[in-house]
Amino acid sequence: MGAWVLVAVASRHGATQEIGEAVAQVLRARGNAVDVRDVEDVTDVAGYDAVVVGSAVYTAHWLPAARELVARERDALAARPVWLFSSGLATQPAAAANSPHEIAALGATIGARGHRSFRGRLDRSVLSFTERAIIAGARGRDGDHRDFPAIERWAAEIADVLADERASV
Ligand SMILES: Cc1cc2nc3c(=O)[nH]c(=O)nc-3n(C[C@H](O)[C@H](O)[C@H](O)COP(=O)(O)O)c2cc1C
Image (cartoon, rainbow, N blue to C red; front, side, top):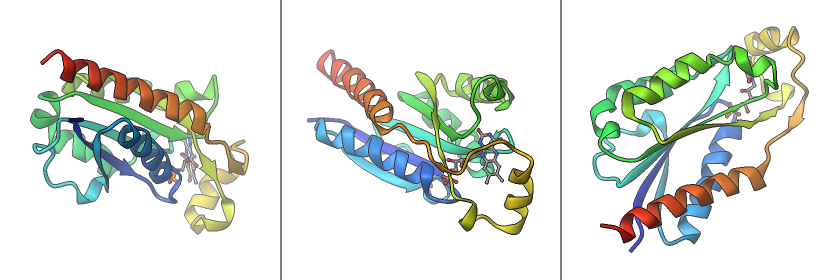
């Protein structure tokens, strides 16, 4: 039997949601049962063996609902294996502006096994007026920059860890 895994995602325009679904697909193919949920719909993580939490990065921060989930479920998350991922468009050296200390601190409070940043997707046509104004000054290029093979490799690493840990129980 595989593990019960929750993939909790904070996404404004769907790019991060689809990354979460790609992670879930790999975990399922490896024999795990996986729920993908919006972070706002997660009331309790206690029923799961492991949790993956992902958020889009907006103006250098994880979305508030993702940060709130980690704070709210801190004790339960600390008691099980957790992996974090971010989806954003900043590239080096701009990635250094994506609050790496904030994410590291968040991960430390729950003993997260790791954190990965994946490139996201920018479609200016779906943005709100405010979002367009914010992004106007940024050099972020329109388009889908998501690297699904990299996402799938990361998910496979998680599946390996879960399988090893279940085998050693
Ligand atoms: C208003 C706005 C602000 C953004 N700020 C950042 C940022 O600070 N750092 C970053 O890496 N990406 C930033 N991005 C890019 C988004 O994180 C990226 O498009 C992401 O994949 C969107 O995910 P979503 O579709 O799940 O909301 C920004 C995008 C918008 C529209």
